[in-house]
Length: 470
Ligand code: FCB
Image (tube, rainbow, N blue to C red; front, side):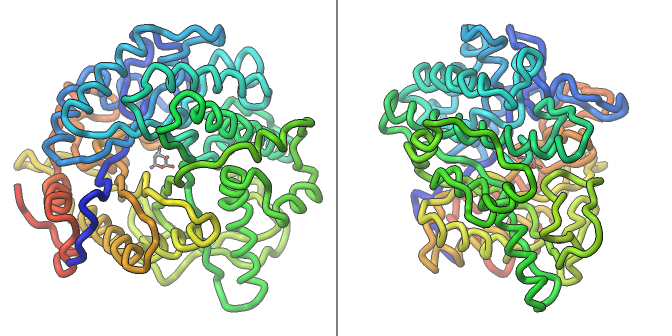
């Protein structure tokens, strides 16, 4: 068994809007994630996993699990309910008790400032990230958080998955119907997010120079369908357009040449202002957060552009296709690919030379409580074990992987599938339409992960078994 370093950050992840609930309690302002066009038969985030009322019990479970770090989020509009720049004391008080209790239990809080929850007031008043006013809003929010939690939160994430945060109109208010204009908005919003991110990093250096900060990237591990040069180039194009365009902005403050050229020749290049270069080049993150669930496969683009898919796949530079080599499951239709994590993280390190922490990785499954009142999830144990094993290989190769936070600590609400799609180590007993008591039940994977943390690694031969330690 590969022994992980003593100081390896074994963690687990959630995001605020997917766990907290209490969407209109404690002075919280509305967020885009509260008001989405929801199908009433699917759970929304109004109650979610009711973490707002179960936070203490949840931290006790984290302590029982042995977590070293909890990768969580603040709900922006719980702290800044409107655009006035005035923080909400009740919102800060909620996070004070949570952070203080985590620290009391010896768990490091690792806080994401912006994980999809866009304050609705900013969207209504000036179009959210489409406007540069949003940069000031984000900066004021960051200033409040950095100052208030100074000395207690020592690791921050700027933005979770900028790719999705800017592409999903339901999360950011981009309602533009014309597909080309919609795409142009996506790139403008993304550019503004990059400016905000760099300004926030510079701000943290002033407020708390000992704290660490970095982006969380949904890495795209893209394989060519064949060894034809055209397919290989299409895979390169896809990685540049979906991953490195964002990470280059976060780390180097510039677009990769291919992406700059692509945006200019496709009339997608954002509006810039004099002085932006100084902002973008004025700071650098300390680490890169890695979100990874599966790899994708592409081939040379043939035929017209298909606009009927998420904006980041709308391109004349590649076409998505099936990968026949990977096992698939109900919610993982692109395939399960642990080696892809290794491939992806090696590329990230070779390009940026920064420490990396896995901020999300996990397996979705449709689960209900068994007749024995338990949840047996050998499929999840197998998935996590195989990905952790890849981290061991990376450490042997000399890649600076500092921690691992599976998604998710407990079952959370998924934006389109509610509680049908569960990722947690802890089961939340509720249905789509009935939140019941949201009772917590430890799954088999909870006990398995507890052992991994205690023993500093995954036993190689047990990788595909549930250990039945209940
Ligand atoms: C990622 C998100 C996270 C969660 C997982 C399943 O894209 O960061 O909030 O929904 O996917």
